[in-house]
Amino acid sequence: MSLAQQKVLRAGGPVRGPRSVCVRATAEPAITAAPARVVVSGTGAYTVKGTSRKINEDRYDVKIAPPGEPGEPFAWAGVYDGHGGFAVADWLKSKLFGVVEKEWTNGYKPEFSITEAYLAADRQLLSVGAGFMGMGERGVGGSKCGATAANALFFAAPDGASTRLLTANVGDARIVLVRAGQPVQLSEDHVPDREAERQRIERMNPNPKLPLVRYMGGTWRVGGLLALSRAFGDAYLKGSLQFEGVAAGSDGYSSGFGVIAEPYTTVTPLTAEDSWLVVASDGLFAEEERGGGGGLDNQGLAEVLTEVPPGADLNKVAEALATAAVKVGSTDDVTLVVMRLGTA
Image (cartoon, rainbow, N blue to C red; front, side, top):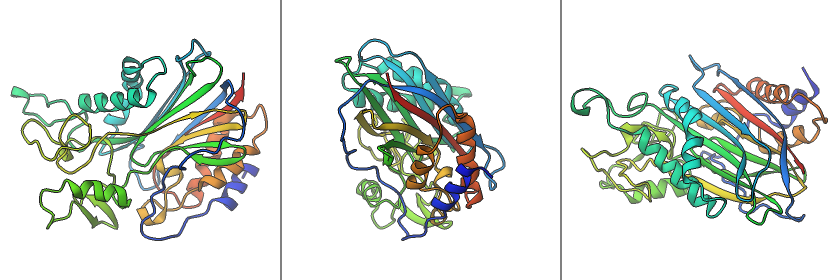
C-alpha cells in the first residue's frame, strides 16, 4: 500500500454521526491572497465499480485547452453518477458540455448560463418516448434512469487578469477545492434528508397528509423511491404534458414529486493558494448512514493531495484515493477527477 493510501486510511475512516448526514458547501471561501491567473497544470481520473453494484453506472469527462480570451472557458471536468442504468450518465458525458457552450455568455452571468444549460439538458433527457404517437416510455434510458452531476468550468475573468472557477451540481456528487492546504467544498449534497430540501419538496405537496419525503429501505427517499432530491432524468418523478404535477422552481416544467435539475452553483476567483480541485461521485465520500458504507472526508482528501510531489502520475493518485475509499468501506461506484492547479 502506498504512503498516500496509508494516510488516507488514517484520515478518512467511516464517518459516524446523526441521521441527517448530507454535507453543505462551504459558505464562502476565505480569500487570503489576490486573485491570480491560475491554470490546470495536470489532471488524473479513475473509476471503479462498487462492490454492491452489478455494473459501473458512473461516467466522467475532462476537457483542457490553453487559456484563451477573457471570458472563454479553457478547462472542464464532470462526474455523473447514474442510477437505474447508465444511459443518462452517458448522455451527460457526451452532450452536457455542448449545451453549456450554447448557453455561455462569455463569462458574464456564468451561474445563470450553467443553470439554463442544466435545465435545457434535462428537458432533452425527459423528451417524449418513442413508439406510436410518442406513447413509449419517456426519458433517455427509460423513465427510471437518472444521474447526479458535478461540473467545474475554468474561465479567464472578463478583465483577463485572473481566473474564475464556476461549479454546478445536482444530487450528491461533490466538488472540493484545496486552498492553502484546506478543503473548500463548492457543492451541496441534494438529498431529501437535508432539511432545506425536505421543506422545499413538502411546500409543493398537494396532499400534506401523505408526506412526499419518506423513510424507506434504510434512508430518506422522495416519494419513497429516490434517495436524491435533485437529479437529471428520472422521468417517472417529473411531470409531463399528460400530468403537470407540481411546478418546481424555475425548471420550466412541472415536477410531481419535487425532484428538479436546478443546480447549486458557485463562482470562485482563484488565487495562488489554490492547489487542487477534485470532482467526485458520492462513492468517494459515502457514509454508512446513507447506505453507501464508509468513505473519505474532505480534510483527509486535502491532506493527501498537499503531499503529492511534483511530477506524480495523477491517474495513480486518483486510483489511490478511490482504492482507499473502498478499503474503509465504500460499496458504491467510485469516480473522481483530480486537477492540479498552478499560476501561469
